Image (cartoon, rainbow, N blue to C red):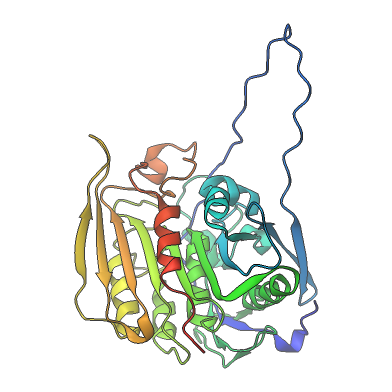
Length: 365
């Protein structure tokens, strides 16, 4: 599929909080003793990598079909976006979402970002990089832009931070083209297309929620919050309020729970949820519940719920008390706690995310 360059979607550049990558290592299995020769195990089935051409760039994504996939059945789709400096295969291992897809009958799709980052590469972000973990390939900033309205990859309108140098991005065109191709090649229920992601991928979830509300039914970013200059744009929805689920650690050293001021400002996780709820027409006050740790020494989670929203929308914020920058219930990174904070398995992100998505298909059109 070719997307004409005249149909570019321009995003306003936004310098974003430096987001680090997780170093994910494949686990090794113990070889059988030499005295007990065995037939070689059959190779594991490799999920197909698809390619779509967008603005002369070949963009790729992995597609995991649920076990016993039947083309006569319509399936929900979950886009699972990787963090900065990693890729789709890394996200498969980190999130373990394939297991969830198999259990509930979901097509899991893992897109690859250009240069391993969803955000626009900006020299300003490199100057703000204050250390962390993983491979450092340059900083990034998420852009805002017009509300995507056409399934062919177009967007109507433009937005931007006029004070910064502007850079075009084809990420929204890529997502539109990718969804077009998925709906052509697989049996997709286009009323149940959702997006989740970690860290940099979580920031891109917000972008999708603000721009592609006609295609993305609900979003669930993990370890992310809204950037300051993205806030104003996302208050100007003209299509529909997108249900939002957030999962954040209160002691996250990579994406600070309380937000960040200065050159790379972000909105705190609680204020992100509050602002999104206000735009979605939810009740003014959140209802808080508490999820205790599973065992002694575990981490408690506070859940703030905004309900009574327009068109059945909902906003939930899961705050993991004393938690750091990690995917709850996923593969834990081989990174020191002083780099990413504390992790735990008291919460199963995939179960929570899928339950939320199940409750929020696209409203009747």
